[in-house]
Length: 615
Image (cartoon, rainbow, N blue to C red; front, side, top):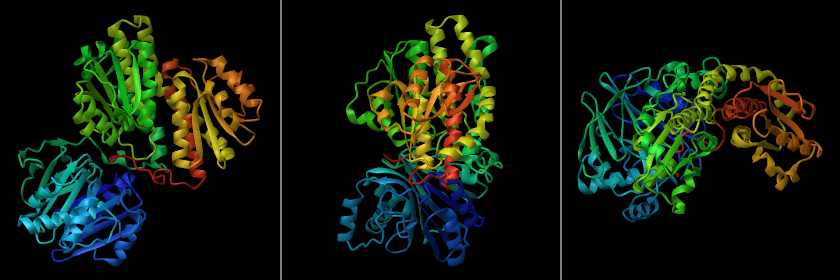
């Protein structure tokens, strides 16, 4: 969950590394560090805090020169966030330097063995243990750095993306990957190393994404040398042309990435169905589905595995698949899935959902399902990510880079992809009439314009936010398709504003949560015209009679709820199955404005990171 950046070439490394770390700060931001080699000495600066704090420290304490450097922004696992535990880490000799994303699970036993051999440790990290293990192997076996890294990694258990250099071999960096992402940018007589391509996109469009259990040696003036860690077999790099552009990873005039990404949703949804949805012809084209149609049509059930916001998208998909395609669906937390000895058969289809495509728990679920013979389909946003490579087939969401830690356009584009899949299967199974099928296609095609209209509620939502910014708790209620939206709305509020919030099925309110309702409790109720409307109105009346403060999300023109609610936010009318794409918009804006008013760091909420690459 940390961000790593490296550079070796003809440019000054420091500005590349600092800017790269700022772009990767969504991956972790409790501490940061940089090491630079000027041809003779290694200069190291690291600190608790943000990359900006590192920049201030580095520019006042070390020479910021050198054509080789490593940088790191941290999400703490082993050891609290402080200067000492920050990366990069030295070996005991001071010759080797490492940055690391991941967890070495057996670090303690290795550490004790190294202590017995005379090694000492300054930090509490597993990473310092790894660099000293590499040094011990290098000395004991009398091998070069690359071979020492390979031997050491065969002794560790866990996940890693690492970059290592030896000051005695200043023309090379050794990198390796297992579980955590790592990209190598290839320039003219220069190499860039990063957790994703964003740190080097203005310098090169050519990149190699390491596969699990691969390592590479990058040398000035030479081609990448790629090998398998387990057996030392030669591997051949697959050089990809990046589709990312610089504008997509900048704020573009918005105060925060989250707000930018909320407003990008009309385009993101359109980009997601572009080329797939041909409403005028009554066709859905999805290569990953078309080529594996029988797997889906003959499935006994679909198992959806995901975490966080992606899990909520999976819950919406459960309603859609069962309603339209009449295929049984189970939605599982990926983090729990493999630990309960699940029953998986060859007749099951597993759909894995992840924005980053690197979520460790979801990857573990994929591997288990494949071992059991299930067909595995991935839904993710990042081209070339681990989930895209590990699954049998899949579909990209085409949301574009999502930098804000709290997912917004990931949620709506995941629902869009899953809706397309469900409609495609329903058409082929004959569980939807042709007229209903065409109606859904037309409705889905109209969603981006309706999201644009829903975004016009922003000034009203900001006004409502001012009223409730100091609340201690908040309830979110929804029914049917909008129950997962209630869960997602609550998650957004708590993760960026730190207000305790819970989402419930509206009918469950009277089975416990109603005890919490008083005049201090804001209750957000999703009460659109389609789907159990009268029952939700009854729930609102129950809240009102107990003096709860009601914020209602309603369909345009609604009158009944207006008479009961303290605040009403309207969204355009659409079919019930697509309503989550609209009702989530004001909830995203509500959490955003409340967080801003509370002085919270919206894009980098405390203790969180964007890409959860550790279990």
